[in-house]
Image 1 (cartoon, rainbow, N blue to C red):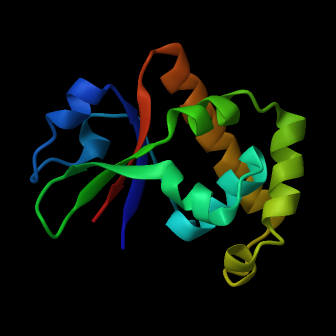
Image 2: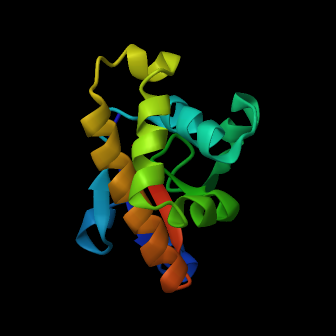
Length: 139
């Protein structure tokens, strides 16, 4: 499964077609190995909600076909919470996130999580400043 995290306006994202790659039109970053369940654990840590609620923070925005690919939108409140994180908070959350079950199975380092979270926070800041959203393309 390939996932791309990107920033865009709802109108522009709504216009994406099956043969279009979001990386050609939007600022993008790879989700790397941090797929939905791993990101939900991060959302749970940051927001203080239970994991089942955090799993609902990425909602289908558009299905390019019935079988996918799908475009998900990050919950606006979570986007705003992430945008408010400073470097110290990013480091603290990376330390907590590395202890989560999904992350432990990936055998990843805290520095890798910090870099990913730093990039995600930057995307959330960009989206907030430009009145856009953070989206996830999943094929």
